[in-house]
Length: 224
Ligand code: G3P
Image (cartoon, rainbow, N blue to C red; front, side, top):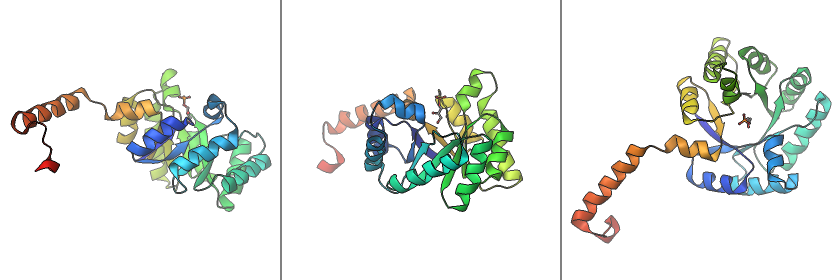
C-alpha cells in the first residue's frame, strides 16, 4: 500500500513527510489554487521537502491532447525529480496518455468514477487511475466498492496499472480500500492522522507510562 499526501500545503507536507511513510505528494488545480502562490515556486518548495526520489503529481490544465503532452513534458523536466502527470479522463486525455506512455512519462488518469473508465484508461497506457471514493459515497454509489471492482478488473486482464484511490473523508474509507487490495491512497494530513488515531492506544500508553514511573520514576532506559 502506497500513501500519498493530497495537498500542496507545505506545512502539512513537511510534517507528514517527517512522520509518515509517504511515497509522494499529489496535487490538482484546486489544491494548487488553494495555496495562492506562484506555481513554480510552490512546485520547488514541495520538491525541496520530499526530495527527488518521491513522486510528485501535478495535473494538466489543458483540454487538447497535444497541449497536455506539452505541459506534461515541461512539468516532467522542471519538477526536479520523480514525476507523474495527472490527466482527467476524456478522449483527449486517453490520446495524451498513449503518447506520453511511448515517451516514458508517467500518467495518472484522474476523476475516475466507474470501473469502465478505469479499464479504458489502463488500456491507453495510464500507470495509475484515481477513483474518487468520497465523491462516489456522496452520491450513494459506494466508492470503496468501485475501487474493489477496479482492482479486480486489473487482476482479471491483467494490466500494469495501479489503483491510487483519491477523495477521502474518513479513515474507514481508507481501510476499506486497503482491504480491497487497492495499491495506494492519496489523503489529507487529517485523514493520515485519523488512520493512526485510536483512543485505546492512548490509554495503553498512559498505562505503560504509569507502571514504569511507579518503579523507576523519571529514569529512562538511557539512564541505566
Ligand atoms: O486528488 C483528487 C482529490 O483531491 C479529490 O478529493 O476531497 O476534493 O473529493 P476531494
